[in-house]
Image 1 (cartoon, rainbow, N blue to C red):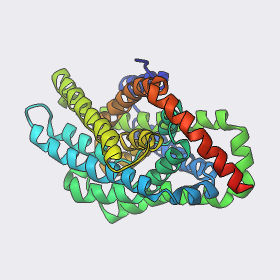
Image 2: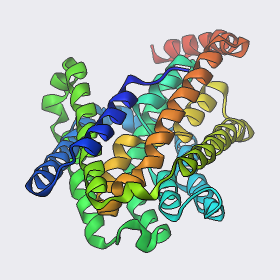
Image 3: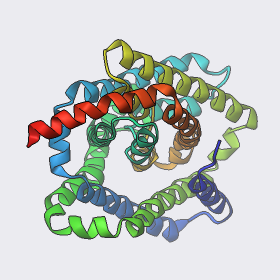
Image 4: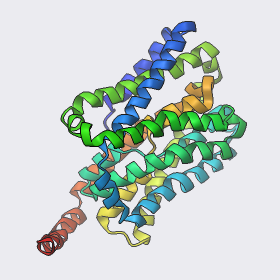
Length: 334
């Protein structure tokens, strides 16, 4: 199973924060830079998303409701159930971080990539991931307020306003300006992709620097980390099985089931990190540790699943049976 090189960069950033944490005025500069970087990141998300694609995707509402239910209902219920693992496997801070992980919206890029590799419904994955990210800007902080309470770093209406200003407002601005800058964004996708990843690295450095200054890493032992990994492995396995067989029970075809599985079983590091920095403050580094581990785990496991789905006999049958339908649609369109 492949290790994403970007995860190595994330780990290197954590190591840098451990060796050379930002302090004093440097911490203020890093915090301001990370806030600006994340705002720019969501501005780019807004500029990339085609409004027409989003409107077309609304017609497949059953699939999107299913993905949203998995992301913001089933996942949080499992996160709440993890409370029973304290103190046997998890400490209170790690359980709070695990619960926060279950409240984060789904991914966009990896859901699309794995759905495409597995020969699933790619347009549905695009819309499902995009809708989840938009809904999460509001729903994730509200769920955090309801479920995390004081453990969420003192959540308040002010925190919600900060998240809206940092994430939603730039996204809407990107959508409004897409008519003029959409072509430029599409032509420079690779360069702007580096901006995406660089923004996340900056947020990680800022969060873990604050954690080092506060000395929170003395509260995490190797045994607890192994316990966390075991719990997350079970969590991912349950969601992968539930999204696949649950979508089948709901009557979705194979291509749609693939989109539901990959969009409904993932959590976004890009969306979760800036929210955690607002909600948890100095405790953000420990709070996002479960999310970082889960992110790598989901990439490794879903890469294997996607490759297997692309080679199974059902995929070939689905492609063959879909050809007449696509031809009929094309004829009807003419």
